[in-house]
Every structure is written in C-alpha cells, then in structure tokens.
Image (cartoon, rainbow, N blue to C red):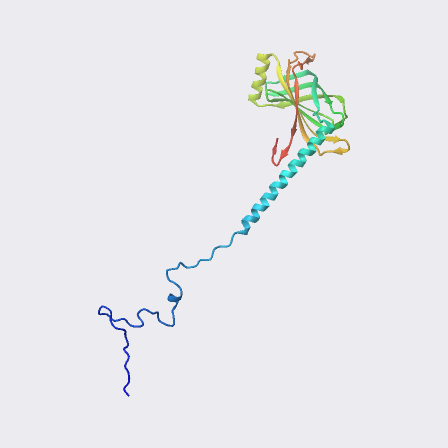
Length: 255
C-alpha cells in the first residue's frame, strides 16, 4: 500500500499561494493582539476635592449666623424702641460771660469764661449716668480755654443746670493762631466761639444698665465781645446750638 501525500498549501489563486498561517494570528496571542494598540491609554480621573465643598459650607453657615444675629438685634432694637421710646439728651448753653481775655505780645493767652449749660433728659423710662466732663473752648479752631464739670446722674424727665469756669492761664499759642485771634478782634470786634464737652455715659433702661459709651457735645454759633475794662461781657447765645454725638472706638479709630 502506498502512502498518500497531502499538499502543504492550498492551490494558488491567480498564480499565488497562501500559507495557512498568513490569515491566522499566531498562538499564543501577544499583548498587542489582546489589547488593541490604537485604543487610548487609560488615565484615572482625579477624585473631587472635598476641601472646597467644606469651605463653601463653612462660609455659608457663618453668613447665615451673622444674618441671624443681625435679625435678632434688629428685633430687639425694635422692641426697645416700642417699649421705651429712647431719645438723646438735649444740651443748651444758658449763659456765657467773659471776664478776662488778654493776648500778650509774646503770644500768651490769659482768659476766663463763666459758663452755664442746661442738660435735659426727655425720656420717661431712661436715666443717664455721666462721668466727669472735660470742656474745651475754641475760637476759629484756636484753643482759648479749658474746664471741667463733675459727673452726675440724670433722672427721667429732668433738667439739670451745670456751672463752671473755663480758663486759660499763660497758655502759649503759635504765631499762626495768634494772628487769627488778633484778626478776629480787630475786624469782627467779637470772637466766634465753639464749646466741646467730652465724657462717658452709662444708660439705665428699666433694671438694665449698659456699658459706658463715649459722648461728645458740640455747641456752636456763640459770639462774644472782649471786655475792655473790669466788667465782664455777656456772649450772644441766641443762635447757639448743641449737637450730641456718640463716639464709638473701633480698634485705633474713633467714629
């Protein structure tokens, strides 16, 4: 019996031969065959940042807390206003007499003023507790005298009259200030005066007492003539107006 011989390749098509391995991949398959090389490389996506969301949440809660505190303060202020109807105290210059005003050739000022002021508390349920009061007097921004008043308690619906002496003894002023005073005395025949009172006040509302706050009272519109002899002259206070301002200190600034 003779052995059959099988051809190793299929017959050629159009004069060519094709091997069995030409159209089939080799075994075992390599990585290039298992994973398509044209596929883009896998890159892991970064995880979302949770710190930013935590900061946003914290800022939101802080803002809401501040708004809530402002709302509560507004409600409390409205309740106090409805119950107590608070008003600022009123101040009026009752009288001002000049018994001495002398500017020497060496720019030294000697002055003496008799000052009377009336404080009025228009509130029915609010009292004021005043610390000692510091008084400064100016003429065209030139200081012409200093004085003080003792502290006092200002009851409800009460008017209190306060008297003191504002004076300057040998106070040296610079040449520019001396020129301003001499010009006022020569041309206007009178001195425009402004009086400033500085103190601290504690407020009592019912049984509640607040902390002390700074208060400044500024009285302007006063005109006074300088005495020529021993008799004192009386200043004109008909146009005098006093303004009461709260002075709140924020760090280094006072507003």
